[in-house]
Image (tube, rainbow, N blue to C red; front, side):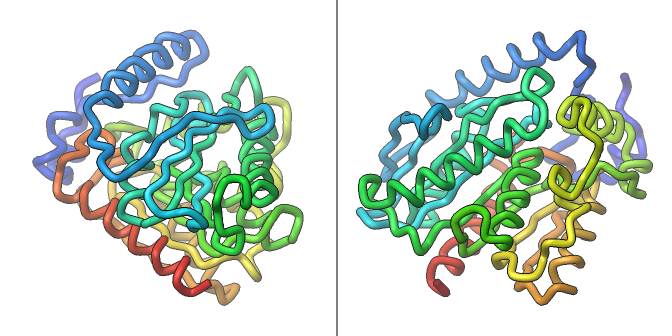
Length: 308
């Protein structure tokens, strides 16, 4: 498929080389897409500067995790849920982001290798993330973490998991958290203007959003428990920092979620990156805008930890 000339016109020139990139989430192609993404991310891991960060793989019960230590013992910690439309990805997917958040945020990052749909539909991934949060809380002494300074972070579909956990924390069904960082988050299965407008955007498009939710929900009807944007459990939610992109089908649900939080009296910071598409920071990691994004997320984390 040729890139939409209007989208290219609106896209920053630094991203023009990715204008034709698409996310094919059709059932027949998922295996090939997974293999390709996993190989690219695996290759990239070897070239990422990890100076100042200690990295070790572990398990939280039955859930594989990767722990990034960027601060001395008894450090604050972030439970991190990677991108991948609920159907793609592993611990390598957002390795670079986790390294930088640990280093710049002066904290420990615990990345969750949650189970993927459609083989493991809702609530498998959310339950895995909840199990890791509980493990970090229960094992804080053993892991040399400060359990009073636990935060959550999620990228794209990982944002749905992190937001869902934050809502559970507000309902006191999982351990408490002091902050939530969401980047280009998946938050609502319902139609929006941006989903209708951005049917051919690079990185992710409106068609892929529909496929993603079908894979994730499986036979489960959409509900407040499964879809963060449908929930009214906002009062008492942790302070939240949201970043989103102008040319992204997920843009409007991120902005609406921020409005819901603000109406509930939750401290909420929002930054929209103009002329960018979904996943711009992974497509072009050395770009100054991608670097600025990581710095902003790390600053938000440091603020959460300081306030607590």
